[in-house]
Amino acid sequence: MLRYLLLLWATLSLWGTEPSFRYGLVPLEMLHSSFAKHIPIKVGKKNLIGYLSFSQEYPLDELSFLYTKYAMQFFREKKVDFIVVHLDSFGGEMLPAIKIVDLFQKCDFNYGIPLMAWIDRYAIGSASLLAYACRYIAVSQKALMGGQIPGRGVSNFSEEMMDDFLSEYASIASVYGRNPILAEAMVDASIILVQRNGQLLQLYSPGDIITMGDTPDLVISPQNEWLTLDASQLLSLGIADFEVTTHGEPSFFQGPLISFHRSPLAEEPYLGTIPDAYLITYQNWKFQLLKIFTHPSFFAALIFIVLFSLYLQMHFKKFNISGFIGFIGLAFVLIQTGLFQEISWTEGLLLIFGFTLWTVRRVLTLQSLAMGWLGLGIIALSLVSLAIPGFDNFRWLNFEAHSSIARSVSTYLTWAGLSLTLVILGIWYTRFRYPTYFVHKIYGSEPFKELDKESSLLPKVDTVELPKENAEGFAHCTLRPFGKVIIRDKIYDAISIDHSVIFKKTPILVVGYQNGKLVVKEKKQTL
Image (cartoon, rainbow, N blue to C red; front, side, top):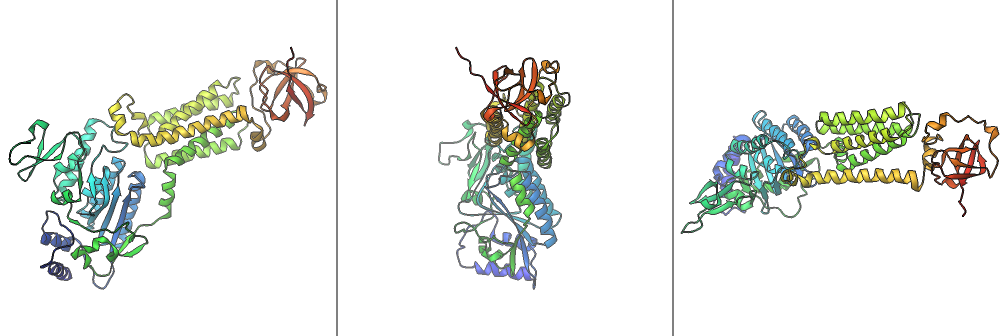
C-alpha cells in the first residue's frame, strides 16, 4: 500500500511543474510503476541500498569480478532493496565483465534485487556492458557511453568468439527492452546506423545513406567508428531512463553507511520519497591489498627478485638464502597468476624446462655456466609470459590484432622490460663494477666457481706452505674478489686486494695473507 501512496506522491509532485531533469523514452508513469513493482520499501525499518563503484583508477579485471562476487553476497545478506552501480570507467578486460554481468542477472532475476546503473562520466568499452546489464540506467549531464575494441584477452580470440561477444551485447540489451543494434554498434565498428524518418536503421554500405532531399538520414554511427553516445542521445534513443544533476565530484558514498538522500539519484521524485534510505558498501581490507598485488609493478618486482636470486644461487654449491628468496618469489608468482588467470601448458613447460637446466648446472656442478645461463634465460621468458595474459596466444604477425590491444599489453611489457633491465644491471654491477664483496658478506665466503678441468689435476696445497710475498703467478679463474691462482704449478685460494676484479689468466703478484688465503694484485706489465 505504501509503495502506491509514494507513487501517487511522486506523480503529484511533478503535476504542473517542469522536471529539473530529463527522462528517456519510457513514460514517467510507467517508469514509476516499474520502480514501485521492483523496489520494495520497508516501513519502520532502514531501507538499505547496495553501492558498487567502477572507477577509471582500476580497469575491469579478475579482481573486479571477485570483489563484485563477494559484494553481491554481502548485499543479499543485508537484504538490500536495490543496488546502485556507479560507473566512471574506461572498461578493461571483456571476460571478467561478462562474468560480472552474469552476477548482475542472477541478482535481479534469482534474488529479486534490481540494479540501477548511474553513469557519472564514462561507461566505455566493457563498462558499457555493465550498464546494459542493469534494469535501470541513470546518467549525468556529461555522461558518455560507448564502445571501443575490448581490452586484452579478447582480440587474441577467434572471430567466432568475437561474434559471441557481439551477441552477448545484443542479448543483454534486449533483456530490458533496449535496442540491440545500438549495443552491437558499440563493439562493432563496421555497423552503420542512421535515423530515417524517426526510425533507427542499420545500413551495410556508406552509399546507402540518404544525404539529399527534404529528410536526409541522420547518421548515428558512421562506418569504422565505434558508437559513443552522450547523455541526450542516451535518453532520446531509449538506453537511459532519466538524467540527474551532479555538482562536482561525488562524495556521498565515502563511508560504510551513508544517507541515500545525499546522492544525486535521490533527486528523482520517486526515489527521493524512499524513507530512511541508506547506501551501504562492501569493504574488505583483503581486496585493498589485492589491488596492490595485482598491479603490473608488483609482478615486475617479483620477476626481478626471482631472476636475480637464482642468478646468485647459481654460483654457489650449497643452497642458501638467495635460493630460498628466489623460490619464495616464484611461489608468489604462481599464486598470483593462478588466482587471476589460467596458466597455459606452454608457460608451464617453459618454466619446468628452464628450472631443469638451472638445476642440472648446480647438481652436476658442470664446468661451464652456459647451461645455467640458458636455464635462467628460459625462466625469464616464462615469467614474462606469465606476466602478460594471453601471451602464448598472442599473434605477433597480426598487426591489426596487436594494435587493438596495444594499450593493455604495452603496460605489462613496459613493467616486465623494466624488471629484466634491472636484472641485467644487477648482474653487470655484481660481476664487473662492484664484484661480489657484498654478496659474500651476506651469503657466506664461498667463492664463485669458474674452475675448469685443470683444477682437478693440480696438487692440493697445505695452508702453511703458502708462497712468499712478491711471488708471481696468474689467475686460474676470475677473482671477484675471491678465486684461485696458480703459482709454480700449484693452486691456491686467493683474494684480490681492494676487492678489485682480476680476470682469468692475468699475471698476479702476492702482496700479503688473509685468513689462510693469498692477497694478490694484478702485476703491471712493463715494456
